[in-house]
Amino acid sequence: MMRVMVLGNCVAHRLQFLLRDHPGFAERFELAVAPMIHAIPPSRRETLAREALACDVILTQPLFRFGPCGTEALRAALRPGQRLVTFSAPHFDAYFSDVMLIDRSPQKAGDAGELRCQPPFDWDSRIVFSCFTAGVPIFDVEALYLHHPLFGEQAMRRTVASALETCARRDQDVDVPASPFIARHYAQTRLFHSWMHPAEPLMAHLLAGLADALGLPPADRTEDLERATFGFNSWPVITRRHRLFGFAEQPWFLLAGTRQRIEDVAMAYYAFYDLHPHIVERAQNTAAAEAAGRTR
Image (tube, rainbow, N blue to C red; front, top):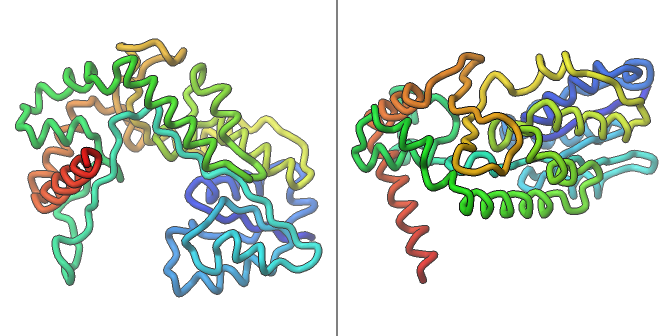
């Protein structure tokens, strides 16, 4: 039996179990289960790298900041006959113009870092955040969100072009890329639930690529994919001010499998910002510094 390890982020973590259950895998391969690469402490990376290098095949997303688990470090340590196959770490923000990351770390060094409450998602909405800082009443946020200039046709065309360029750049020299599939299908089929969580068609494409790399036949895995991917949480896709996508608009959030109105999610973010003014101030300062940098 040949041992196989799949390394990478949450997408890789789910793909490893889909691959394990793929027809024909169990007859030829044994899966060495790996944690999400960003979830392990640096002290554990050397051990994980040794475990990976004990396998016959390493399937890995391109990893750059993970020491001995980095792709080039693993490649340099391969023994004769051992294979390393890279596959895409897809990231696509063309549907989600308003998504942004806010630093939610402790207020100052030495703080315990405990938040008084948790926001609905791991990322934030530019629209909701700007409404909060501008003092927009919560009951006006949904209408502003649905008709925001970020979702106008010209703005969305720029966003799509930038997202496709970023996808292609991230997939350079990757053995199992996602960018060609994304470029062909993004307008007809929703390929992401959020900017870093692929929907079922793209997960099926990546799974088929990994199976092919192992010499396994393709298989119809629709039911397994629906259970094992990321559809329980999804971000809105607003298309009413443009017709760039052929699939239906989703003017609501999906949180833990339950549909949530934009107003209700915005209210949860407002509560989070009210309770964590240092996070709001830090985000405003960061945005101001970035804007000043662009004007220099």
